[in-house]
Amino acid sequence: MEELKLLDQLLEKSGHYHPLYGDGLATHLPMVLTALDLLNASSIKLQHTFDESIKGLEEIGSLEGVTSVNGIDSNLGNSESFRSYLTYFKSELAQCGTQAVLKKSLPILISGVAASAFHGLIRLAYAIEANCQSEMAIALAYWSAEYQSFELNEETTNESLESILTKLSPLGENHKFSPGLIVDRMSEIGILLKSKGSITQPNIIDISTLREFTIKSFYLSDDFTLLHTVTGCHALSIVLPYLEDKQTALRELWKAIVVAYLSTGLRYQDKEITTVENNINFSPIIEKALKSEDSHAIKLVYTCLCEYKNWNDALYFTVSKRAILNSHS
Image 1 (tube, rainbow, N blue to C red):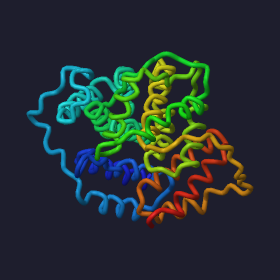
Image 2 (image 1 turned 180 degrees about the vertical axis):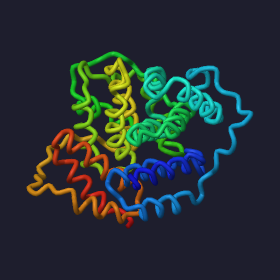
Image 3 (image 1 turned 90 degrees about the vertical axis):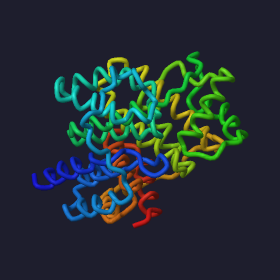
């Protein structure tokens, strides 16, 4: 119990800091603390990670006198409204509880699932995993303030996810992007896809097909943006039970994955994967992750471990092994 109590204390402290820092970069502190705890990190590692990670972060400050938003959909996508959303969600969670707030909020937020390069969704999933209500309030406020939706053609095709992206990838390849973050590149692609009326949706979609697509794409192109589609897909599987309309949620995530992929400018090629893992043992990988200072590698190892347990897909082992070997320890 001592380890869990420390996690709760550190999550409470990390909740004093804004989800974004610098020029719109996302802090991974609460997520990496939760991942480390679930990977059985020592209290020394948790404390060290907290102490190192708060450097450069910006404090949220007192919410006293901050006016709450009128409702979830009143100011979506306005970064300046984060503290007003945080006031709203803290009050809602205290009055109504986790289940009610998630079931009310998620149907509204899901169309903006790309928020902060999937970090709104991912942070909420980790907050649910940690069962930390103060973290849920921050994650929901963060998702609301950074909400990013794409109004794309909803028409469907009988083509596979791979065929759809193969057909669309020249758009990203040939586009001249303006300087900016992942969210800026995704915004440009979203506008481009909308203007062309491109069809992105398959007739049938499910979580299994989506997660298989994301892990395979990331394996084939070890790209930073695509890493977030893998962790984002895992995150959606955690929040999905709180959504009645699961089909819409899956389609919104797929829409965001398409935009994210095209924002890399990479050509999509559906190649056969021939690697076979004969000896799957996550223990050495977890051991390395617990010594790592690379927050993305730690979170990816945790995601891959969970998804391997869920789906028995050896590609998660291969990807986690590659991530931890390449990480900055």
